[in-house]
Length: 284
Image 1 (cartoon, helix red, strand yellow):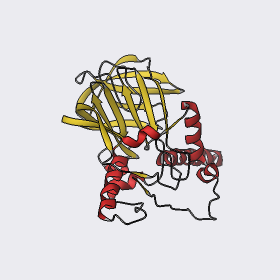
Image 2: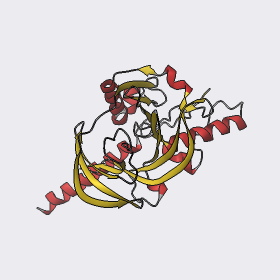
Image 3: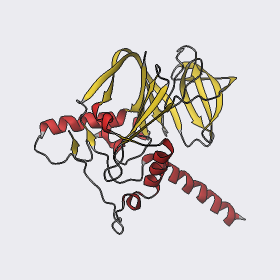
Image 4: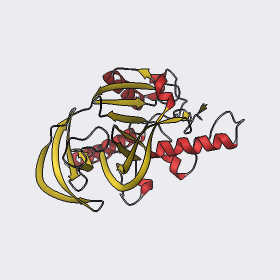
């Protein structure tokens, strides 16, 4: 009996480890750095929200799988990885400092380390266009895989059930809501103190800003860690125009394959007992 219990405990720990690894990314190759100076202004906003993705300690940035930012303008909202953008900015400045270098180091300091392994949870940017009611995902693929991709769909609608429970998140009193969305059951905490119907990733549709949301298995947890007020520009990379159009489900399957077996998916055999660490060339 003890042996059976020990087996299931070990299986649970291993399952949790694999889920964490998938969020970290199993592909041992960085996507190509993007020139952070080659961006166009697409809107302006007065508020930006920072969310921690799967934080072991919400007060310790180094424990986050990713730090992500939501920018909400009048016509558009943008959701993306702040760590990835910071890494692009560091790479851009490094390339300016060393213009004849053929590659850029894979590690550019503490704020760039979270982008080391590719994962779709960190390397996609989402734009919601409220004039056309369209959400577009621009997916940056790992070096050696398919070209960068993009797809568009109607802005997803979650059918929420609002409950009476309350919780304080980042100093704001929030109310509870639940929904089922694309195969998972989610719990969200939103605040009417910020009456904006938006949230992290593809979430929205509540009478206030979603500050925390997670699925029932706690595989994905987005939690607000900072709210910034001011006058900000919303920018989009110019290279997005050349991203390869793809069906949403086809992209999802490809992303899963890359996480499950990166080398086989790109047609390269892994070295025995070794990980092949690649440096990424600069995208002009």
